[in-house]
Image 1 (cartoon, rainbow over the protein chains, first blue to last red):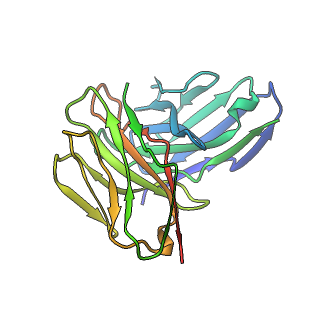
Image 2: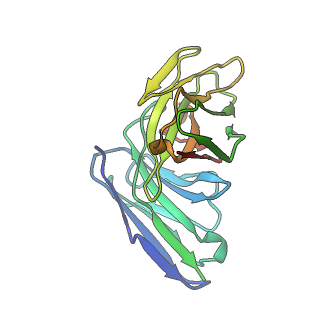
Image 3: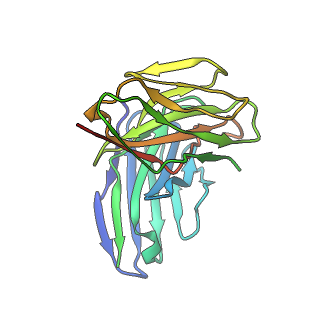
Length: 113
Length: 116
């Protein structure tokens, strides 16, 4: 089964702080995604990438940057964290388009106080 | 853009009763892919079943769903609920275009609680 590893698993930061969430997948998948999960909103796509150096804007990108440094590694950056970014963040990966399964990591719970 | 609607946020039912979770979608693309993902407590979402064939029933782990393009629906059903079915269920939509990968648009989720 596909392995997607996120770190840290929990993070608390202050308003205005700088946070980086990390994700590594070890299954040679081309596509990687960052989602946030909030009650009542489901899972919403922040950014995604289809290869090293590539970045695509998702549905809720405001306040987030992302970078795909290698095929394995995808980072989500919050440069000026706000309380509205308190959420559960999932990284995911898939190997192709359309009908393929997306594999999720275990999530990072971020709290901005 | 694409959208997915799950009308029930919470569903509570008794073990042994049938399950039906509603899902409708909107997309401009004629060949969407529809998915159901399940997320148990403190776990990550995982694929339950998927379909892209109109009017064909898809089954997995006792659950089934049929994609109906005429009504833009992909409802999840099970004949008899089990306690272990208690989880958060997401309907999701993907379409193939512009190197988007499996860019999933999720519904708001339905939390299913099955009680003894």
